Length: 391
Figure 1 (spheres, rainbow, N blue to C red):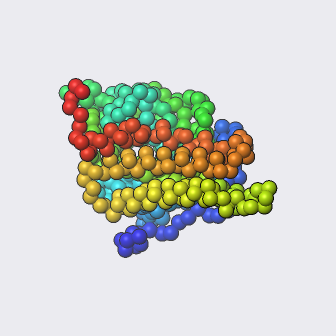
Figure 2: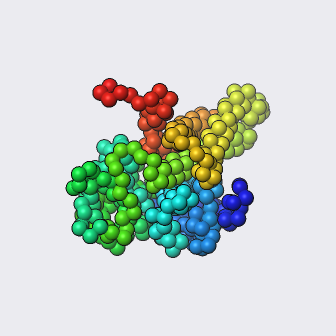
Figure 3: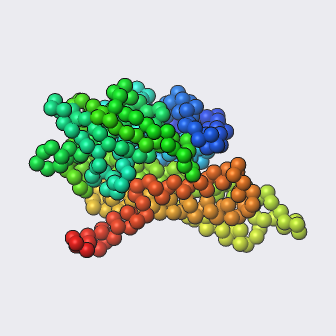
């Protein structure tokens, strides 16, 4: 932690008794396909929604690096809770990034978090592989600086509980199309969630499809309009950096837990000849490989989050570094979980086992932006240049 950070952060960690309670509830949320209501209530009471809010505004002032560490801790006991509630932390850290770089247009995010309001994302759309660089949602001006949004969003984490929902769409009424970003309140109406979250894993996020039905967002809650296409605007960078690294942190936590479960198992097992399974050279080699994989991605996430906090200028390398780190972390976590289940053996194949749940939860990582293929395209373009138009 830098000296500047030390003077603006208060230490914050999830209370041990709350971690224990979340670990006990996680299997039930998964089995019942139910939102993590109790986890949210207890974390909110503990100050979790305010951890990234400046100390002067009643928060703990945690930067991206420290917030990622909190997310790893929660993910070890309740991955779906960490992933879902992490969307709130993405917005808080995006606001912190914008502020640190001289902008003030996300100050309302900080105010909402300081008031313990839960923030969620209404960004992802079916068929939109350009994510923040284009939109299939219509944003129609109301004539007074506000907009009405009509469209369908998918993977809206925290659907049952959000207080504030970010929305964005495309305004095609002008000479050039513009992407419009704003925030809706639950009380606004014009938002309908489908009860369609029936997934393999990460069930407690309840990331339901969201239909925007002429949702009106007034001018004072429109925070940015941007051109269509890639841009290094502070909003895009802030959201992108926080999203990629906080999501990656969740998968680091999953990998750490899978490794711990495998180690616990092999230390307790003996063969018929009374030999300790932990002394088997094949097991030791596998555990060493798993530990190395976890260490590699944990250090990458930590280092990049620190660079965001400390305003390190990676220039055009920022996006390749971020997408590459997220993609590698998800691949590493899936590898570690698969190895853990192999080492543990048949008991890990029981649906009620924690490793079975981690096996399902970790698969969700490939569906969060940026995907492995998208990351590869970004990295290749950085190294080799863009593919010529028409190819």
